[in-house]
Image (cartoon, rainbow, N blue to C red; front, side):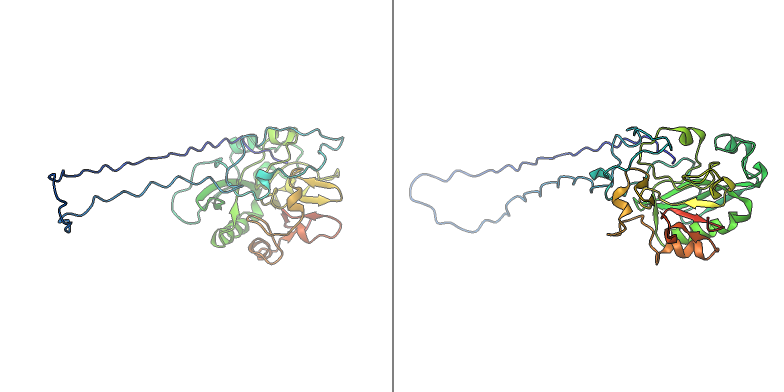
Length: 292
């Protein structure tokens, strides 16, 4: 599974204390002077500046994100772990890997075939079940969990490029949030698991999970969407390993894919199938052109 970039977010609160002064006039000594209405109004007392509230739980990435390595078993995966409190309602967006596309709404850029410099930082190598000239580089805008406009990138098979531009346009219009959209690198592929990755991605030259035959990702014909909110679940195996709270599909939280939601509908419109509908296991993040 891809590993996220380390993210550290610092916050600070500022407290402003305001003081109002007062003044008076001495009365002559002797008998009390009858009180009479004042011709001037009392000075206004300024309202205190509100103290900034703390970020909502789950909206700020923890400083340790992507740094806590888990002991991997012979299959390369670690045992499922209890989801840390900071990630039980995960709703933050990490920095974009590419420059923002111009404009204010949904935008896309399609480059076919993918440039050599892009392939060089991917997992493509001779022997993968897709030729390098068959891969297309997509840059797409998406809605982050912060509600802002972001830009990500994918490597996909050229025959699916236009369809996937349509899919992510549908997700933009549905305001479905993504944390980050990236091309998986060799370093990601070889890294020790940390169990907290959440990159939306497509092409990865690797075998299927738990098998030896190539995955549909190795042909660029599969996409994983928000893997942490939508984990792979097979028996006791949960991937990412810290996403166990999301293996339970209720309550529905931001970024989760549901059978009747916009993500399944968007991929169904181009004829792709959802791994969340499989019976022998559940791959809630996974969509593919072939249903595998």
